[in-house]
Image 1: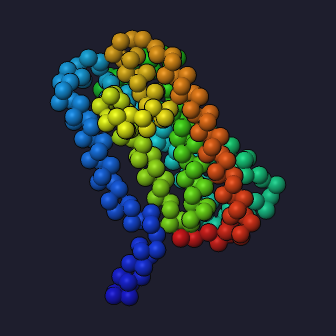
Image 2 (image 1 turned 135 degrees about the vertical axis):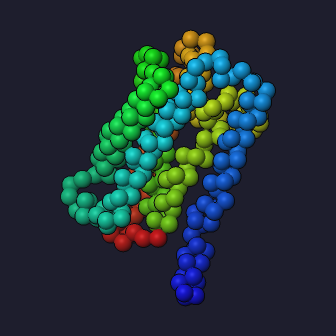
Image 3 (image 1 turned 45 degrees about the horizontal axis):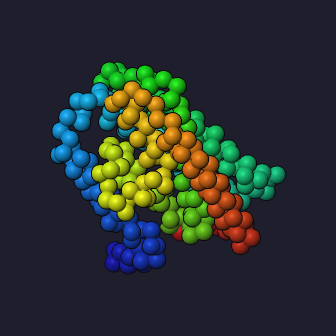
Length: 258
């Protein structure tokens, strides 16, 4: 028993993502709900101003969350089965794998978030599709941002091994407090507002609240979100392709471990 404990301690010491994870989740929960509580204290009528605003925020956040996991976790499944090297013994190219991950991520997100939207309608009488065509703009911006994060996470796992797989969950929640999911960006400290303005999700949730509260479509934030997503998706794809190339050159595709 002592030998096994020592083994797990060495495994923990040798993996910085695991050490960070120990304090990561409680810290993120405190930060996220702390900002929300601070906003609700000064805006007690927030929930009464627009029916379903928190449900809409949760549903849209789930789109980005599932979009990111649809890329990274599906990629991890190939690593768990040690199938990546066999796949690339075929004419398959890395960018083709990335495109396939996008498609399966879209499918998984439509199924998962679609069911969640139906439950929100059945149980809480909130039809998120009442937002109209702009809902699809929200959807595509958030899922593309999720894809970009998923590619970066997959690249980090190729570089550091499966010991970094927890980044698949950690990365998406790291930006949750500064995305303005449940509260406006103005609640954040000035330094974090600068970070928020560099995230497509922050503009999407700002436009979502404007639509629910004031029944107006803010086109400018949506254009900013689209432009940032093009940049981040290109960056994520570049990181993934470069780390994949290095992993293949160093023979890590067949023996990638922790």
